Image (cartoon, rainbow, N blue to C red; front, top):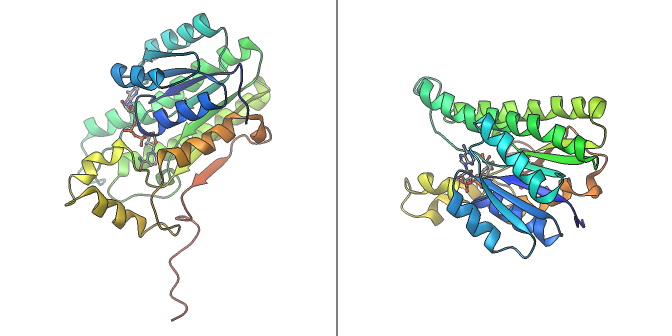
Length: 260
Ligand SMILES: NC(=O)c1ccc[n+]([C@@H]2O[C@H](COP(=O)([O-])OP(=O)(O)OC[C@H]3O[C@@H](n4cnc5c(N)ncnc54)[C@H](O)[C@@H]3O)[C@@H](O)[C@H]2O)c1
């Protein structure tokens, strides 16, 4: 898993999975660019790291921000090897009650943000000449539908297919650069805070979610970060265009009722 010398840009690096990923990549020796709209949070992430690291303000839905963030990365470290597109937002709503404004806002961050990150990282990785690994954080909701999270599911489904198209492009036009997606089940991060408010306690919400996961619990940010480290490392060198499900068995099959 050793990532010494490599440089990783992690979006959503201020919180949850992104923060855990920055720490896990740094533990393997990577130098870190923690990128987020939440500057204070990203600064907090890098302060906790032992490796050389910077925080950059990045709104992933803004192409100019991406151009500046990649330029800052190259200026500081001279290369970019790993991109983790982790920034994301959630909005509830079914097809009949979701506003188009919320649809557009969510797609701009979750899907366009991932598109822009890949678009601008690939030339920088190619230029540096060391190959690269792009890891896009989708969701199990990017593989199956969600009645009350229509925009979220559509955005994550888009990330699933975007990832495959990018993997094919890189195989032809940027050899050595890989692109894979990760599909977590529920992860106990700040993203669940608004949902927790609808329950009498966070523990009650997590227990209800855990009932849907055969492994018996929701995931932690560390559970996802560990898989991201694997996809970033040479241990996954033959993997590109893959959808890596990290769901404690949730999508493995239907609940069984064939025995007493
Ligand atoms: N938490 C879950 O249950 C879960 C499950 C499956 C997939 N995911 C995905 O994992 C990723 C990380 O989620 P998390 O659970 O760590 O959530 P989180 O809310 O803890 O972190 C998301 C981060 O993204 C940042 N962000 C939001 N909009 C941004 C923008 N426009 N530009 C840059 N940064 C922005 C936030 O400031 C925050 O730091 C998301 O893509 C999410 O959809 C989460």
